[in-house]
Each structure stands twice: as C-alpha cells, then as structure tokens.
Amino acid sequence: VLDVEQMRRRVGGLSTEVTLSMVEGALHDVTLSGITVREEVFSRLARWLRCVVAGPQRGCSGSQQHHYRGQAHDHNEGA
Image (cartoon, rainbow, N blue to C red; front, top):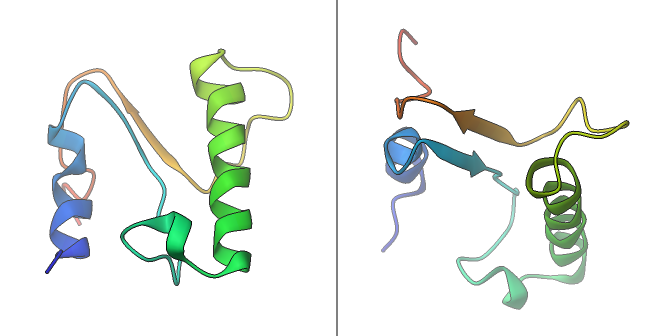
C-alpha cells in the first residue's frame, strides 16, 4: 500500500530538482484512472514538459504543481 502523504512529505529529498503534482482521484497507475483524471494528468504533463523541461515561457505561471530546485528539502518544513 502506498502512503501518499509520506511520499508527498519526502519528495523534496529525492533530488535537487523535483516536481510534485497531485491529482485528486488518480490511481497509482494514472493511465488506469477515469477519463477526467487522465485528461488532467496529461494536461499537467504537457505543461510540465513545456514549462519546466523546455524552460520557462509565457503562460507558465500559476501552476498546480510544486517544482523544487536547488538544495533538496522537505517542502513542509516549518508547517
């Protein structure tokens, strides 16, 4: 059984550059999730490829994803 909250707390320690995007209702294998969830996941993936991998561009602010650059850390630090 996957502990989503534990994974969310530890994601910042995986690497110096990590992106976290949690989609409500998604299954562990998101491709087996319902159509609405899959559409949201693939939309976020396309945006991540465009805005993070290809580099910041116009229209890339206000993401529902959390991107960590620099020193690995727990993003709940101080919470």
